[in-house]
Length: 621
Image (cartoon, rainbow, N blue to C red; front, side):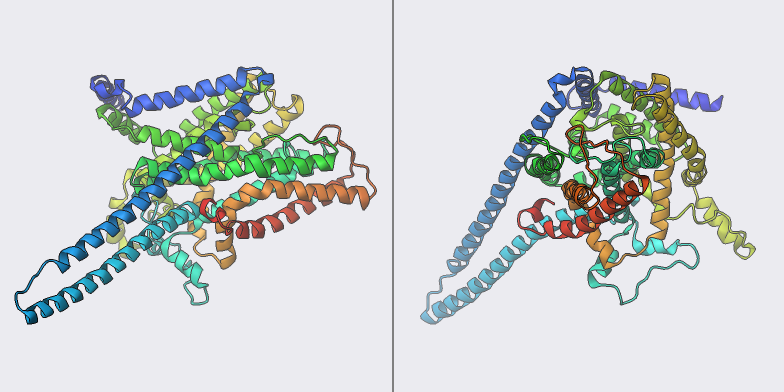
């Protein structure tokens, strides 16, 4: 009863703040801008989903977004260049004025005094000139350092000095390690590795490398005959086989977790990036330069080249078309960052603060997260059902909606990442609360333990329970989620499931993916304390791997088709422009899958590491 009264009182206070805040009714309100973003997303999705596929609105949106944002990026780049140039000219003008003032400052009547004055003035002028030269060099170094820091921030997503605990100091994190676990601080580490570890915890960057490896693995599996298909690479064994069944059980749920975790990690550093930028324009320039310009290069260059190689392999007549390959994720991430900047650029009124306070009370790092993610899973199931019923293969930006992996959940995880970055959710992982018992049972330190226990607030206890819950929930949900996915895939054609079945499967996958994400973050944070030089190089190359691996997959798959035709004498026939249903033995499918996966991974990572160091590309990748 008391809880009910308290909640009702809180709701009344929030509603009163919303009603009395006049800013909410203007375009300067964050709530109003958030509603605009939501309305745009719903209208955008509805227009693409329910418009006949012959109009190809998805491709139209692709072109408008990529070319439009690329033009904006170039304009911002020019503005940044002239602003930098203007600052340098202003500095030079200031230096010249200081020199003239010093020379004309004193005029002695005697010759000796004049000579002494001239000598003094010359010495002072030389000193000022030296100081000004040093100041100019310092200015240039400062500008270069800002650019380098921006690149480092985007590449490594630094952990220290982030908002409210995203960056716990490495020594503090090590202090709460479980007994017997220590970071390797020996002098055998490479200097670059030692420098990296002195500034940040490596676990999020390691997770990103693992996710990129998994993305490449999944796309190779698609081409080798697993579940799913691509519109940019040849697909072998396009029929039900052991690899499609295995892919349905493993790859399907894994992909749902993988992409959601990508958006969550990306959202973590967005608030920090906004606050570290002097202006909203600077934030947009840094994001667009790194996200949109590589997408443009792929859209007009690498993508069409990829299609040309694929069509050359399958014997299909080639016509130049724009092709984004797998970069739908980059476009979505760009949109989320633009929406975040648009909303946060507004001045927060009393109503906005009331809404934020409400989310602070009911959107916390505790078991209630499962309720939020289940609600998102219901909406996700509806989107998948509507998408399959519309008959449109490519939805927004060509991103296909899969169970547990669609537009609503991406939004939720990106927003949750932003909220986690601002409210210090990662403190709970970095302080190892799930690995340090609340009561160790040591009676010699009862008084000290009691004091520490008193300092442990309810939020920490709830967070510990959430992490424990994730470890228990994952094995309970992964079997029914995967089994139900196999059943529905075998019962219905593709993903054209009834509404109720679609929602049930998406809710199961949403619960499973949240549990797996929490486990991955908690385990890596407490187990990954050091890296080697190879891992550091992979961290640097990860983004470039994501950009260029499609063309590597296509080339390696085409090489395997050539080997099958000329080495094994198997006539691989492509019934469509990219898919072949030529019957292959299970052993041949296995061998081809291993060949494509291993060769693609071995080529993509070293190639990407050196590609990102090329002139111009080293500024945007």
